[in-house]
Image 1 (cartoon, one colour):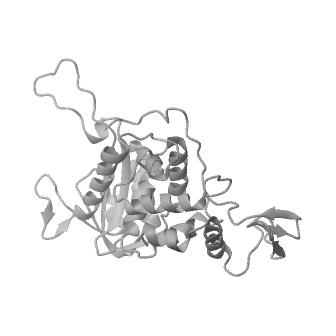
Image 2 (cartoon, one colour):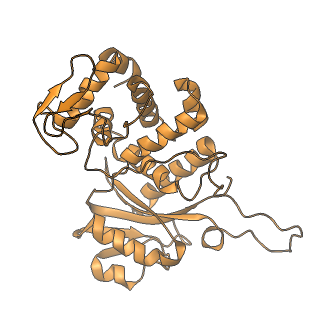
Image 3 (cartoon, rainbow, N blue to C red):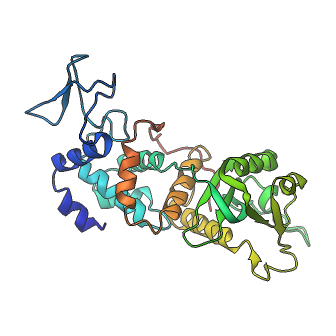
Length: 312
């Protein structure tokens, strides 16, 4: 669904609210506080009255839209922009497109990212696993020692992301932001949670984090990158291509992130990747946004934003 179709289908605030009501309740509206079905619609405004509690409510209660003063058409527009931008969209660009301040645009985008946290996929088949590091390059010393090189990866203050991806068309990816000191433990947890080990084959590089525990759980092939990038079609190119999307997005759009909000940004990239061929991605996103069973974390932007993770 493109932006013209969205505005044509939901031209007013009332149309947006009715659609969200249908996504959340279907034909049986219920009170979000007590769950009672004994509710009555208001005639003058798009709200409902719970006869059991004698309180009023709307379908925005306990969703990412709760308490917003921004028209829902602008929320729908922001969701469309974030879903259609493969490498993300910056807060400043979003504020210019929506006609709001940067603080409002950033807050809206972070709430939308809360609804993008979707890590419930069970992967199977040929699974590629790898880790990457995001953040800035280490500062060069004042006196360059002959033959010395800048550290990379684990030898820096960069943040680490681990992941598994299915090597097939429309394959899914699962990610996690971790501490570098517990890489093997977190990889095993993510593997047991999101991979069907009895029906899968794991492909990794020669990283030391892939211990013998992985071989005990499932069949594993290792690509020795110091010799070759692919061995008769066995490679980790799929997940490395996904890392490239994340890094280009951070460098080209966001420029720098804080460690605190990094998990939300990688959830955004994972959601777009997992739904890249989904023609109903926009409606599925709205369905997530009004899902009262999801745990949303509402964040308020701080002046000057968080401390910089590392500038790219």
